[in-house]
Length: 296
Image (tube, rainbow, N blue to C red; front, side):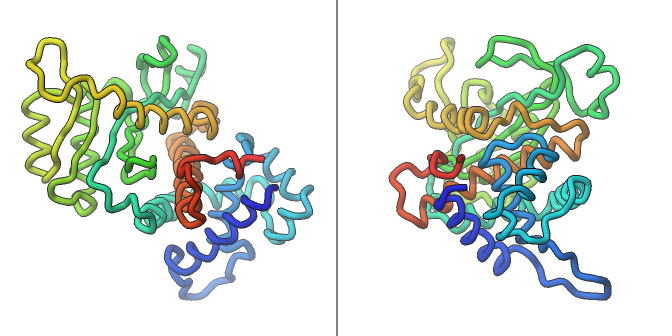
């Protein structure tokens, strides 16, 4: 584990313990592994590229430095159960990290949807617990069909996640994004610019975003008069965010087999990216979304 990752985990633990984890009340034995330590372990697992929880737990028990930081490390089954029940804590940590960064006050937000494959065979589709949640969709970046879910992400210009959700790829993009924005009205500031792609065109959707106080900005379609142009250079920002999730954080190899499992593993990757961006802001790094210093 690098010195940079050690520093990130230490700073993250302090932030989570002070501002995220509520104080425990009531009767009952307190867990040996605290919620703050669990969050740090979830981030370290993704940063170091361990998709398999069994391999990750074995690695922690075999690494003196990690075991020194987390002496009460759980078994694989205990770690898995604690992580699945920590879904609200993961989401709360992401938004807390976002609020601590200067990019939280940016006037420009970006949004896009990217594929989250969950199965590669017909037998998996028949037997999976994701039936009813996942579906078939087309991934333009790989030029192929997949079975799984879609990640809808609204983020700041540096890639910091603001709001996100998972949905069946057969649902319309405008319908899902409208529901996501409607579910998080307290995060929307009046006059906020939302940069989207051509798939979010249409007068009803534009009117809906205007009612929410958003200024929708998207590339022009070929059958439209000139308004914004193709916005190719700006649109590349959100594509690079998706590439970070898929390339460095292995979003497509999440390994989830149930709705709760997929949600937790996607949240882990978004949290790892948010933690890296937050720490790069606090250490005044030039590239805010660079995770190279933490992935080995």
